[in-house]
Length: 243
Image (cartoon, rainbow, N blue to C red):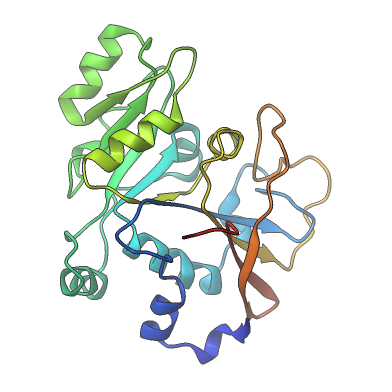
């Protein structure tokens, strides 16, 4: 269960993050936080990350069919087009996957910067996941540069959104937040796995947690493994009954 990250090469690390059943639907969430629970420092989550965390970050992206991320996180973290390196493209081809995962941006009102490279320079046509009651003109504008999934009123119906993603053959979903998206999919009982890197840093008061939104019921997870690297703890939790 406990291993040193430096002892794992690329194939071993890739195998370690295989979902229980690769052909079945699976929703994995990935976050980094400080040791005292902060999701960011002065609005920057990358201040808590580093080379060790990024090794796993890249493996998780390589393994997914679709990357689900909130519009706020896209803006704050400066997301670029989802394009993998040549070695990761080769791995995906060897495993029967398309060259790059699909980027799916969540915005309940479809309020997005649609001329950003994330949309205009994407190697695969992105998706916009939004509420069915988003302004029609925004839905029409989004449809010019992305495929649109609109479901739910007053917000996104994530259970239905995941169903629609899977109907497109996008079974392996990786969610990188933000905290409100994580809070909503947790409340809906949709999270199969949490990969959490604990950075050996103290952020102090003021920063938010990795999850936000209305309270939800307590859910148990099983610790699948712990990796250590330079004071970072890379934790992998899965739901108790992965099937």
